[in-house]
Amino acid sequence: MSRVAELIRQTFGRLTRRYSVMVHAGPDSGLKHYTLPAVVIPVLLAVLLAGLVGGGLAVLRWTGDRMDRNHVAHLENENARLADQIQDFRRTVQVFESRMQEAQQLEQEFRNLANLEPIPDEVRRLGVGGPRPFTELQDEASPSPVVREARESLDRLEDLNRQVEFQQANFQEMIETLEESRSRLERIPSISPVATGAFSSGYGNRVDPFTKRTTMHRGVDFSAWTGTPVYATADGTVTKAGRQGTLGLLVEIDHGGGIETRYGHNSRVLVKVGQSVKRGDKIAEVGSTGRSTSPHCHYEVRVDGHHVNPWRYILDGGPRRNGA
Ligand SMILES: [Zn+2]
Image (cartoon, rainbow, N blue to C red; front, side, top):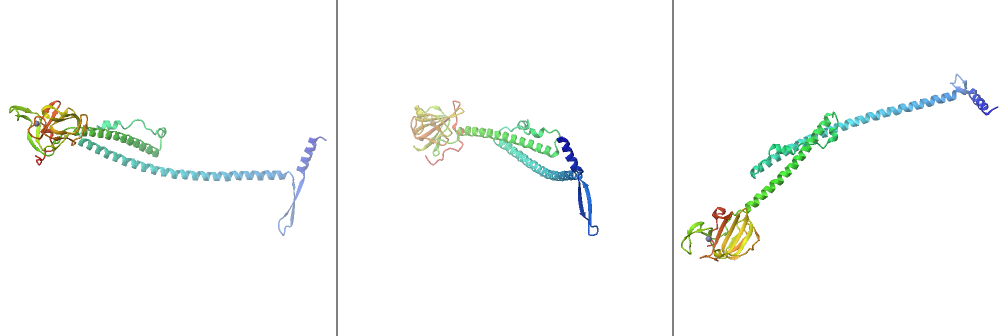
């Protein structure tokens, strides 16, 4: 007999083999006796296995659904919270916008006070607008209201950012302009060259004390004790510091913008040519050098090379009369 035929015979023999099963059904029934063909066993096992797999799949599906439902609820929660936060964000942006408007109004008032041109609204708007940086939000074709709100607020925030930058540039410009005008003011003579003394001779035609003839007096004279401090009447640079003919020991200061001052007949000069001086710096001491009859300060102001009446540039009322 071949091996294959033997194998078939063995398998068939096992399947046709019968098993006896005894079941004790109760005290009255006694023992029940069944015989089952062997082929039933694998069929039962297969049915049991199918039941187990099917049940397992059902359990997995149920838990999966449950997890999905939890996840959706969690997302809904989170969405609602984000929507609230976007509302808060929007309100904050609105507050910033009104603060910015207040700052712009203050700036315009400041410009008025400082005699600066106001900034036209068109120019102010030029700094705002242009491409938005939040492109990933814009790519979406039909955004939800919440996303639209978030995008709008971000755009407004970006506008605010540009307005702040514009504002910073404005203030920088204003500071520079004010510093310039302050420096210009500090270079305009505005005080008396001596703090103590007495006005003794004015600007214009007068009888010369030496020649007794009518001549032009190109400055004003303040009589004062020898050694009385002589002050620079504005910021500038010393252009002469020494003996200068009839004016004796002279100091000359260039204030820029075509303005110069001269201080004559000093007993001592305390500055050097090229030196920078500030208004109120002591530059010399009163004396009677040059063509002078008594100690006094001869003070001249020149604008664009022409002599002008220095009284126009003495805004502090002149020296106090306790020195001479
Ligand atoms: Zn004089």
